[in-house]
Length: 527
Image (cartoon, rainbow, N blue to C red; front, side, top):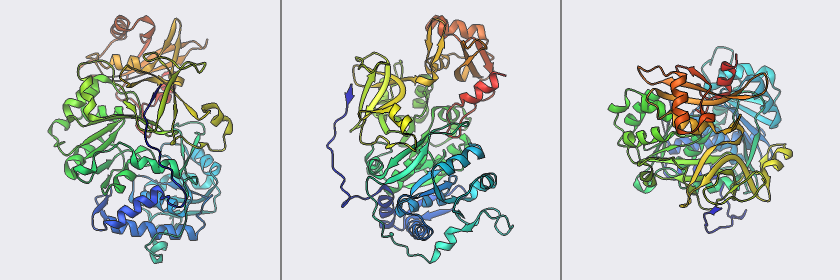
């Protein structure tokens, strides 16, 4: 068991300042600095952004947003999406964002399940709204701006931003406490109805003390948000704006556009999932891009290849920072740039040590604490753990017990207190003779000279036996064969780890948040 101790400071209702209020205070205190650069190049000052957000909060309140209500966002990476999230928080409403990449029926079920009071749609998601609106019945649908179809007669709803223009540009008189609902974040997935994770204002307020992002003492941070604001990029945007920084928005992740923006906008902070980091490393422009402004490149969210992380250290310099966290628990561990030197000599890459206030235990399936070095399920306890799964007390009880959260991840601690992840327990492949964690095989295959990128997954046959499959993007000029990859894995890890089926692909499909989409791979490879 490893714990990081920190001095606990009680957050009472009388002195509590919510995360959205904290961000807006920072923005209003330096009104002339650049706060947001939009995907089309518009530049918005802190003062203008704060004023628009305060006005929007008053307008949402007038239309029914309040404590106990839900404002649902169908938004992309836009300034309007950020303003709407903060405005709803200032109004005291819980916020739900409908993720891109989910089907309209799934989005409709989520919209209904969270008791939506207001649905807000920005210009990036008008096409999604056209599919969604016939499937839902909510009190009001409003547009965040005129949208791309202004004047065409097919507008989504009244422009709530325009309607808010006459409202006061000052904080609304709404008292938000640490125990009030902040929002509901849904687990990933492209099929089925994802679980809703209920978070509260108090735990999220502590995120602003998290040891992630570059040090503001080195100058105001400039974050490039090239992955969805609905996920970690949105949290990093919150921290950046509160720390007097600038958020540069991109509609989606394109490696060439990311590299160009880092150079053009003098980006200091960048967040990427490992598959997206691989795409940056493989892009022909990486060697001729000025990356000197970068102070921290955060990575995490899925298994990181040791080979590619070492390559990234060479390309980007000593700015890589690994993080491990969950929507159910916020930040768990950090592996800061200065500690990456320890991995240059080889070996696996840890996700770091637990951050202050987080206690982590490795346990067997029967709940017994395991000693250092042994692999088991990761359990944790902290003040940032979720309140529970929305309207699912059964699921909440299954993972929260006696104040401890069972993460569903598998890992181990070494003698220096570093945590190493193996995989999600649900991704475990049960084969004859044992079990296989896909990330272990992926890490190994990525050291093979013929393999550029890969994803390992299990597929069941008609007898319900699982088999190890691997999808491989070949290295330039290479065409790996199944027999050579099997021999390579067998010699280094053992026969049961060797892939039984090889699929050569041009790209590894990714989920909307940038993780390998193994559901799509299984579906495509099971045909």
